[in-house]
Amino acid sequence: MKKDNRKKIEQKVSIDETLPHQINAPSFEGTGIKMEAPFVNEHGVVIGDSLYASENSPLENWSEDTDPAIMSGDAWVHPTNDIGWNTAENRELLESKRKPQAYPFMHPTKDVSKGTD
Image (cartoon, rainbow, N blue to C red; front, side):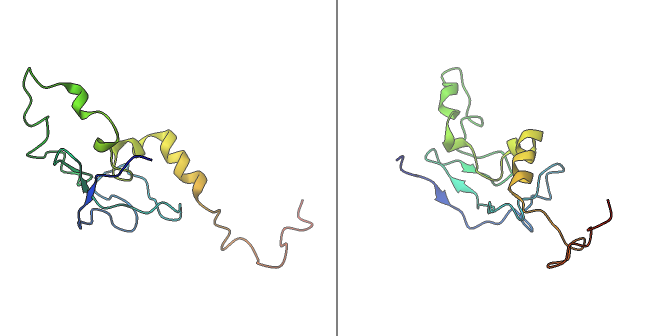
């Protein structure tokens, strides 16, 4: 198993299991997935704070000698504050994890639809 070199930051960027500053961000509420705090990766770059600029980022210090591969891999992806969650496929994934909301249309012990069809 790969060692997690991430240093968590005590900074909350979510409200009620969603990211209100992202217009199409899905809600994680009821999915069993908990919003995670931003972290600092092994390159000293803050990931998941929604600011997208970090003093130590290769993007901020780009030159012709910078190898783009340095910015690949899991060290650059936040598990819950990532633009990928805004895609239709990932929103469907979250919806599939939610329990159906029966209230207020179901009685807990009686089949109220019996005989209506």
